[in-house]
Image (cartoon, rainbow, N blue to C red):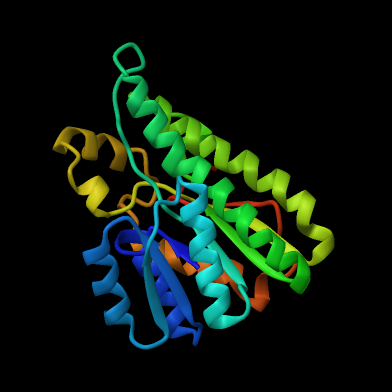
Length: 235
């Protein structure tokens, strides 16, 4: 299950799982993009329009996936938005929107699938954090807070579920080429790239590779960790 799977990192992640032979259920708030993505991935992919910040919507999606597949092996909490602005001017609605989509959604989805995974005594939960959740970033207090919260949520739930053979980890992307970052002004882009020791922005495939690895048998003994895929922005 991949939230925010219609585009960017979510779409690349879903693609990576399908290439590994997995059946993938993606959700997104954008029905047209979601359907297009699922169709492009072939018969192994399904799409459902879901507001991941709404608990009922999430529970309905999980029930649908369970009725179709009978089990849930991997959850990728990827859905995310930005509403940037300096803290002194930030609207309460922009704070709430970002925390609801980026952090509350991970709570909703994790809670919903954990019951199934506990019964199975197996599962992988992978959360998308961000390098800025560790180092901070001006003008993004809401986004940074949501991603720092993801890291804390990851570590707490990893300890709760470890005894049931369920691993919980986070991937923290750096500056990645996506539709979200494409809208940045040139000066902001240049400032971000100047902080990257490898000298370039990452790609969605870089992030997807880390997510697929954490879901693989090779990562069976990794839990409660934050894997930074940032070209060295954080060391």
